[in-house]
Image (cartoon, rainbow, N blue to C red):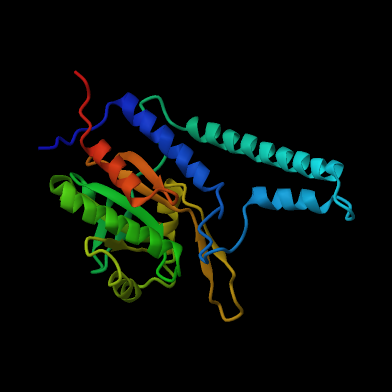
Length: 269
């Protein structure tokens, strides 16, 4: 029988620190954000290296010219590493002394039946929270399928834990993700998923509390567009506190392992 306990402050703080590192790292990976077409765009680091290479005079390749390219690339990489660390330190500075993270907070949206749902609605349950949009062609479906695989594995191997977890999808495109559109979208994913939306202001406020990057991309003349957004799955404990977060690079087995670790943690007496 597994015990579900709230981590002590020091453990919560350590978990949130790791979560922030992964969150910020995911926003510096390739692609930088959820560019919603596979293979679209390159990272800033790659762009910098390519720009440096283009400055080298064309002609016969020599060891000297290759050396210049490598030095320029290394300088660019060092700059972005320093910048990433600076952003991380700034984020870490927002963790207050009580150990509560500066990620998350109260929110209110509506579900597919038009009923009001708030963060309080999930008290007593652990939640996997993901921000996305119904017209996302690749990354959102991939991450949501990954969560479904995690849930199925937990149901098979750890049924006591699986029954206490709720996956939540929040639309970052409320202008197009109507209740009808989300109901149709929900048919393709795990039946346990809870789909939420709201007014643009409600969604924007919630995204801001979770530091979710959201921006229109590739808007066409007829008004169609994609949405760039952060790719993070937020894992909350049964009191609503952020226990961990999982980035795109993590495999279903990695996520499952972390969830089991968090939910069965028993502090030493």
